[in-house]
Length: 241
Image (tube, rainbow, N blue to C red; front, side, top):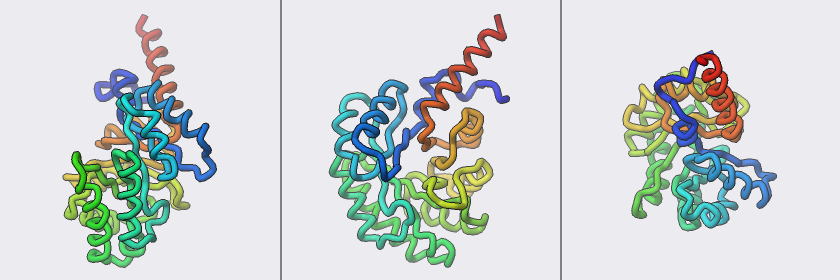
C-alpha cells in the first residue's frame, strides 16, 4: 500500500481536493443538508449538486468557506448550447461558484471542432461575464474515448479557454476515471486543470490521481476516503512507536 507521502501530509490537505458530490436524482433536502454539513465538518473544497439544490447549498454554506459546484447539460451533454448556457447562468445566479458541463459526445466522435468550440464558448461567456469569473469544467467521459478523441476534445477545451477538463460524469456505462486518462488529459491540455471523477472510492485511488497531477477530485465517497486516510495515518504512527 502506498504510504502517505510528501504530497499529502494531513487530512486537511487531502480534504481540499474534494468536490463532495451528490448528483442522485432521488436526493431530497435532508440529503443535501447532510452533504453540506459533511463539507463543513471535513473541510472539503466544495459540494457538487444538481441545479435544483444550488440555492439551498449557497444558503447553508454561506460564510463557511466551502464552495458550491453545479452542472449543466448533465449527464449526457446533448442539450443545445444555448440551453447549457441558460443552465449555467441560472445556477450562477442561485449561488454556484463553479459550473461543470458535459461535452457533446457526438461532436467528439465526429471530430466536429466547430460545434464543440461554439458549445464551450457559449457557456464560458456566461461563466466569465461575472466577477470574479466562475471556473468552467468540461466533462469528456474519458473512459468512453480513445486516445485521439481525448486529445481532440481536450485541445478544443484548452484553446477555448476552459478552466478544467474533467474525466467523467459517473453515469456513463463505460466507467469513470483512471490514471492513464488523467495523464493523457494533462498532456493534451497543459494549461487546463484536471478534475478526476467517477468511481473514486478508495484512498489509494485518490493518492494516485493526485500524484498524476489532478487539481480536484469529484467523489460521493469523500468522507470514507478521509476516514481511510485517518486510519492509515494512525496505523503508520503506531508502526513508528
